[in-house]
Length: 159
Image 1 (cartoon, rainbow, N blue to C red):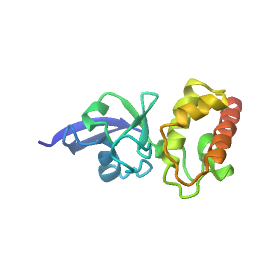
Image 2: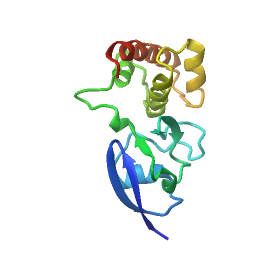
Image 3: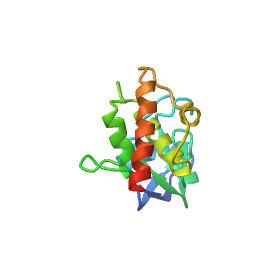
Image 4: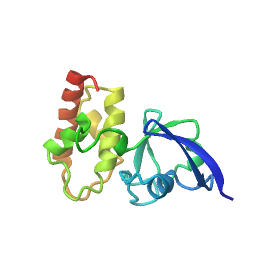
């Protein structure tokens, strides 16, 4: 049975009609038109659906919308804009870290959660944090460079 659910996304409180167990990903994409998170596997295996909830990167494809009530959700759209990309987004652009781009939402959101907790991660720390995000295109070296570039920019700008 559908229920009114109130969630806080990208700094805005939004009320949606959804089944309590409906995946957060569906509400974000279908109801709120936030298309940064992607449907990949639907099994919490690929990371394409990643969002940040209360500072932690989570897989929205397996997170019930009801579990988001009372928490702060950030999607890719909440980081920056085309006119003013977040330093992480800009670093991924500068390093040309996307080939097909399908994994990039998960890579960027995981990077954001990582850098918020560890602003100067080691290579192994970056690899460990990103291990749950699948990329079939093989831009892993560029992604690693983008995370390092973002860390240096955030350190300087404090974002």
